[in-house]
Image (cartoon, rainbow, N blue to C red; front, side, top):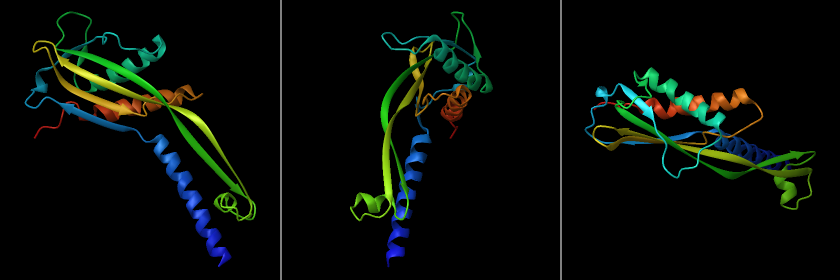
Length: 186
């Protein structure tokens, strides 16, 4: 009976840790678009800034734009600095803090047993604050003066000490976000 209880508690702690680590890594994307828009007519785009929006430092701004530029070029769009672009592209960024819990159990029991006052083994729980970034990408038809596509990717920016990991995470998020641009034809 005691072994079954300990095994169950160990399984619960393991699932909590696994679930916590998976949700911290998952990137969620959503998009919406103007129905009836002929996306095949768009060939060029130009970067614009949203008035009064807060932007990151120049390095991160360049990395974000490069990740988006790469995806848009794979979709057949060409970036221009001229005034004759078919589309205006703008992004906004929001970074918030999220608490991440890490639980560790060791010894003759499981962390939950210790927390429940059963006195078996030892356990510790630590928390850390991670930054979760949401990037919103807006695409506007210049001639029609209207928004034609909007997408957002959450958990896009979670800065770590590993610069390559940061860039890979950003590129993965932008590929996932722009997977549905242009929107699938019906």
